[in-house]
Amino acid sequence: MKMKLSEIKEMSSEEIGKQVVAEQSNLVDLRFSHELKQLTNTAKLRLTKKDIARMKTILKERELSETKSASTDKGVNA
View 1 (cartoon, one colour):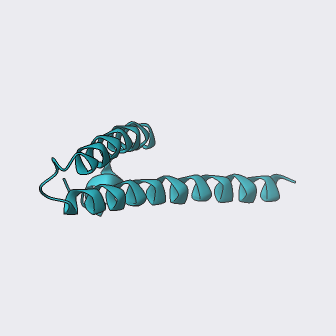
View 2 (view 1 turned 180 degrees about the horizontal axis):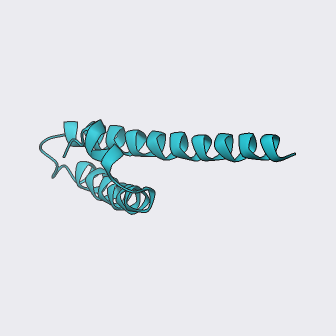
């Protein structure tokens, strides 16, 4: 399932974290199915990896913006 960037941005950071864990588990299952020659649509592997990367990117952007805003707040108060 391909997630859109706008869908990911609407989710909270906690929800995204849970979704990343779920998708990583799904990726393991897909790889296992692929090894056993049971996976007919191998594009699912690539899409799942890209979804995980999108979600991790959004989480990192949020983390960086929080630390940036926290550091600018400290600079103003000091």
